[in-house]
Length: 81
Length: 232
Image 1 (spheres, each protein chain N blue to C red):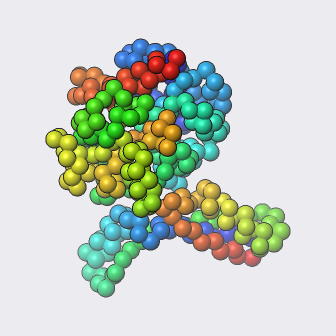
Image 2 (cartoon, each protein chain N blue to C red; image 1 turned 135 degrees about the horizontal axis):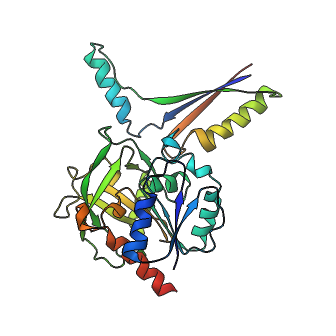
Image 3 (spheres, chains in turn brown, yellow; image 1 turned 180 degrees about the vertical axis):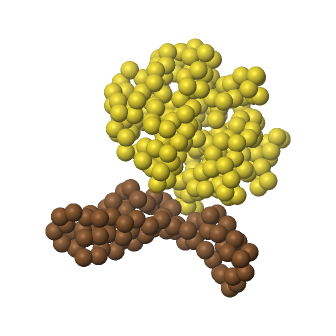
């Protein structure tokens, strides 16, 4: 079983890296970009996970307590069977 | 009074802090490896600057899980003193001992230069030998020093006089131009509600000798030593 965790800055938290990326992409000639936000992506391979719900719960705890800083970041968990 | 300096894998300002405590404060000081958990012989801790765990994940995020940190939390709860400098400030925020977070600098650069900070309150164990509004010239050296917090936290920090240092110009004006990293409200350092835990991004331990360009940082260590002497 595999878990995917997406960590992104909360709306309203300034993202200087996203801004710099947007600037570079626009320099390349891409237009119409309203905003770029940079985040983090984790792939976690799970051994012996009993069921999807249990896996989701345990990975959500990882995301909450380690992978993200809840003061500035949100997370989303996906489980693949 | 005995000082302890916590050393994580990747700490690199530990020896500077040791030098300042032993030479300028003139007090006993020991290094504490991050796997040690016995802090009972110490009166004050310094969490030094550096790149604990290579800044992996987020600056300070992994140091929080070192064995010593549970003891550090208990140490703080007993009212003893903790000074977190730069990466130490980031660790204290990640550990929940101080509110808010430190994100990438506004202009993305790693900034290493002398800046000015204004002492916002002398009502802390770390600033009681200084006058409010006095201006210190101290170096910063960080890529993630951009302090963020929500509106409620900022209001609480203001209300309780917990903003200890603000970035300012040489005259002491906390202007946007004098804000090196985009920190909210020019915040350079804050303390906890019990006032015994201070975190700041500037490096006072690198500003304790005129030979190094400034000795303004000494007053922070002097204040702490005076506090400890009064408590003892």
